[in-house]
Structures are given as structure tokens and as C-alpha cells.
Length: 196
Image 1 (cartoon, one colour):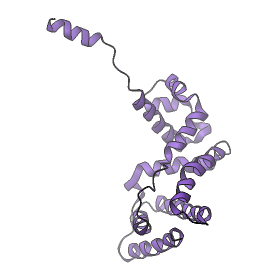
Image 2 (tube, helix red, strand yellow; image 1 turned 180 degrees about the vertical axis):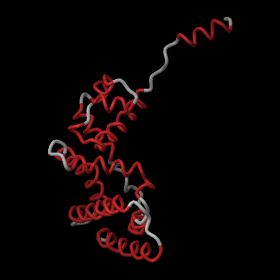
Image 3 (cartoon, rainbow, N blue to C red; image 1 turned 135 degrees about the vertical axis):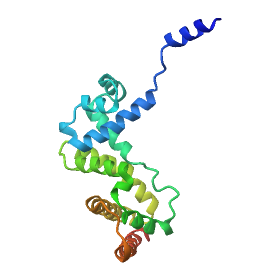
Image 4 (cartoon, rainbow, N blue to C red; image 1 turned 120 degrees about the vertical axis):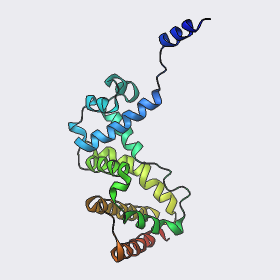
């Protein structure tokens, strides 16, 4: 076969589509758009444009706006986030992370904004509640263990979310003696919840 025929065949062959990459791009775009504008003001066209995808692909992969929103919520929580986490180091590691700037972890900040918007909408709050129970509080309860694990999981989640809000508002790292005092006190608050 000649080189010209090989080049011609390569050009005319249809390009392989990467459905998984497109689906992931749509999910990320959905989190960004829902976080920016909220559920009610976000259109599927906005999400498709952000993802660089055809709006028909959203319907094909997710079925519609509410189903996409639900998948975006699920994708915001990694149920395995505590697997292998060292209990002894956990409190200090979280406290140290919270002493830093929110911008250091921009993806997590965007996800948090998306979840905050979801929590404040009557349309999406019930969907968020289901996702939190299954993919956030459930894994925390399992990791903590013990008789009062459900209560401790709620307290730990509330403390963690409070730290995220404070860090998002502050948006700059703590320094010097204030940083050390913050880490020590935050770690001791967390440790009281982690300890059975």
C-alpha cells in the first residue's frame, strides 16, 4: 500500500470519541456552573458550553438536569476519603491544612461553593441531604466506629464544614504564633471528636 493511500485512509477514518472524558468534563462543568449560578439559574446549554460538549450528550449520559445535578453531587464526595487515614495524625493534618489558604486547593473551594449553593435551594437541598448521608456522613461513621459514631460523625462534619467556611472567607494562610495556636486548638477540637 502506498504512503498516500495510508495518509488518506488515516484522514478519512472517524476519530474515536472518548465518552468517559466527555462525561467527566460535563460533570466538572456542572459543578462549576451550579456553584456559580445555582440550580435554578443554570441551563444545560451553559453546562454544555463550559464542557465543550453538545447539549444532547448531557441528556444521553445523564438523562436531564436533575439527574446531572444528582451525579455532580455524588461526584463531589469521595466515599473512600478516610480509607487508610491514620487516626493519630488525622486531627493535626486537618488543622494544618485549615491554617493554609483556600486558594491552595481551588478545586476543593469550587466544590464547596457548589455544595453551599445546593444547601440553600429548596429544590436541591433534599438531593444534597441524600448525597451527604450516603457519601459523607456514612463513611465518617464507619471510620469512627463505636456506639456513638452517628453523633460523633455529625459533630466532626460540622466542625470540618465550619473550618472550610472560615478558610474560604479568610483566604490567606495564617502565620507565626497565630498559626501555631490555631493548629494546636483546632487539632484538639478535632481529636476530641475522633477519639472514641
